[in-house]
Image (cartoon, rainbow, N blue to C red; front, side, top):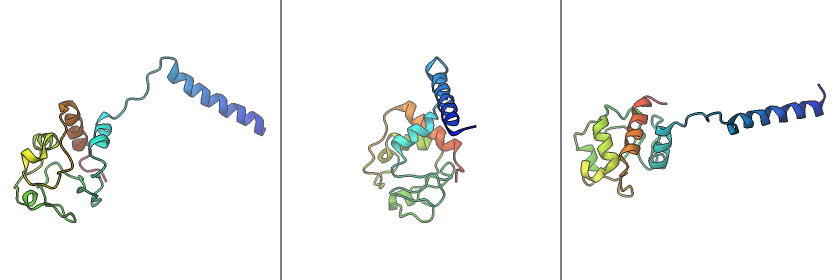
Length: 132
């Protein structure tokens, strides 16, 4: 196949792919949990083990003791809280960290009022609890 014919064939294939999405074919579903996590958490947190950023890695967060993961300088209140992260506690934390464990270091984060978005984040964390 000559170069001009290959270019035309490639262009037509690309146009056919675009046409499929513009003529009523449904777009692939978005991962709403990942989107909610990215919008509210990813600036400070990662799901990769040991990838501590401004906030600690959330790898394996469900079932973990608060403030105990190695390699991150947690606040004293978080280290001594005795909290084990389960779905209900994480949901409350995402809503208002100060109400769950006062004097923590999440001061720049004011919480997330949207209950549906909080649920998506917790479900995403649960689904990716062992992400690496």
